[in-house]
Length: 424
Ligand code: GJV
Image 1: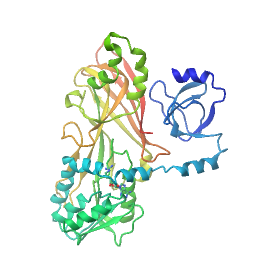
Image 2: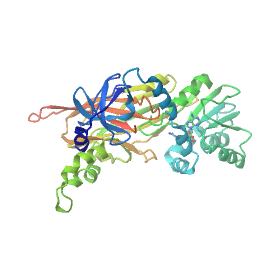
Image 3: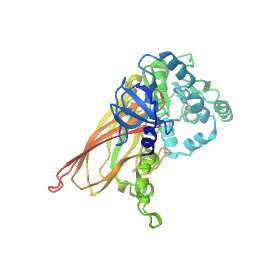
Image 4: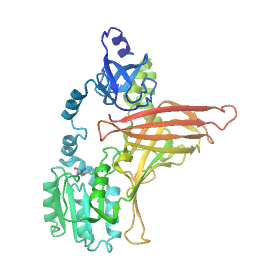
C-alpha cells in the first residue's frame, strides 16, 4: 500500500493518544482503546490516518486521536478544539437557512403526510393544548396544528435563518394568533409556560445521524409538562442482511476486466473508498432482502436520556429465507406517534423497503467480501452505534456477525466485524 511505502522513510512519526475506544472494521483498520499511544506515520486524508499500535499498522479515524503524550498537551488541545465547533452549527444551521433541504423534506409525501395525519387524527384532543414544534423549519407542522386543530398556542422554534420566512408564512396563512415563532436554538429559548405536546421531526440517516434528538431530549426535560405527549413517541432502527449485486458490480466487480484489462490491483482502493463508509440514500429492493428484517434498536422518547446516546447496542438474529449473496446490511427506521386519546390509533412513519420511499431512503453497509448464504442459514450478531467523541453529530456503526450454515457439507461458522464511520 502506498502509505506503507511512504512511511518507511518517515523518520519521526507523530505520537498521538486515543480519546476513545475504536473497533477497526476493515482488515486495514486498527482497533484501540482509550488512552492507547499510537504513532501516526501518514495523513493521507483529513479523516483517516495511517498509524501504528504495538508494531501493527493500519488506518485509524483521525478524530479519535489527540496529539502529544498523555496529559502533556492538554492546554493546546483545549485551544484546538475551541477553534472548531464539535456541533458544526454554523454549517448545520447554514444549510437549513437555504431552501434545498426544506424542499426535499416538504416534497417527501410520506414524511409530511405522516405528521399531518398525526395532527388530523388528534385534532379533537389538541383543542386548547400548548404545543412546541422543535426545529419547525418552514413551519409546516405548526401550520397543520393551527389549521386542522385548535391548540391554544404553538411555539414554533427554529435556529436557522429560515425563521424569517417562517414568520411570513404564518402571517400569510392567517395563523399568527395561534403560532408564536421563536428564533434560536431550542436549548436556549425561553417559553412562558410548559407544553402539553412536544412535536419534532428530528430523525436523521440511520435514525440518529445529526443527533438532533439530543435537542429534543433536552427540550423535553425542560419544557414538557408531567404526562405530556412526545411526537414521535418511539423510534426503532430496523436491519436486514441483503444482496446488493448491482452496487457491488458498479464499485468492485468493475475492476475485474474493464476493456479486457486486469484492474484488480485497484480493488483494495475501491474497497477503502466505497465500502468504508455506509452508502446513504440507498433504495433496497424488497427482493434483495435475504430474510425478514429485525428491529435492532428501540428508543422510548419518554425515558431515553442524552447520555444513553453515547453508545446504543442492539442484537439481531436472521434466518436466511432464500439462497443468495450476502453483500451487506441495510438499515432504516420507523417512528410511532401515540394517540392523545386513550385507545386511539397510533400513526406510523416507516422508511423501509416495503413502504413508499422517503427522502431518507435506506442506509447500506457493505461487507468487505460477499459471502454466499443458503436458505436455512442464520446470521446473528450485534450492532453498536457509538457517538463520535469529538464531532457530536457523527457516529460510528459497528456490526459484528456470525453466519451459521445449516447444510452438512458447508457446516461452518463465519464471523466478521466491521466499523463504519458516519461520517467522521
Ligand atoms: N434548535 C432549533 N432548531 C433546530 C435545532 C435546535 N436545536 N436543531 C435542528 N433545528 N430530521 N434531521 C432545525 C434546523 O434548522 C432545521 O430547520 C430543522 O430543525 C431540521 C429538521 C429536519 N432534520 C432532521
